Image (cartoon, rainbow, N blue to C red; front, side):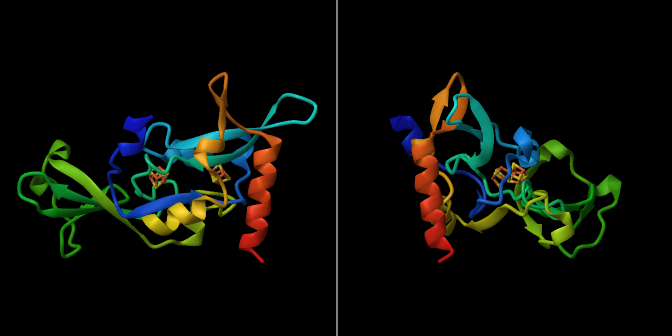
Length: 183
Ligand code: SF4
Ligand code: SF4
């Protein structure tokens, strides 16, 4: 656990938070398929009163999220930096642009291995959002930590046979907290 707690977070200053609009995409989260970080977006099941489990929502592991926004929008410009020269390249819809946003001719492009993804820019266009329920919001990291507590707390989510599960008590606690948020 100590190693888990001291782990350094890499990436941009942003954090993705999934709110109460999340429907879990009926157990097949679309956002999870877009996330480049393993086990960062996780499906949570709820325990049913009669026994058994049902997909509930997803939660983000705040220690793992690198703030890349890939779960958030498809209208992203990726920002790459050349590992040796420090030169910046913008990538949008598989095309590369230089610092002045002029297209880079293919013969002037560095090899992909020489480039490092250092961030993204997003126009936040509604029709390009990944989540069909608009349940994903990007926050400055510290603000995101606070907001996420209204929707999930990893330490209160149980693991049952390798699945994340929230029990009825925790679900009620969160729903009461969420009611406060919108008062
Ligand atoms: S895409 Fe939206 S509704 Fe689907 S699992 Fe992700 S946050 Fe939830
Ligand atoms: S911002 Fe990036 S790392 Fe964070 S949850 Fe979304 S896709 Fe995953």
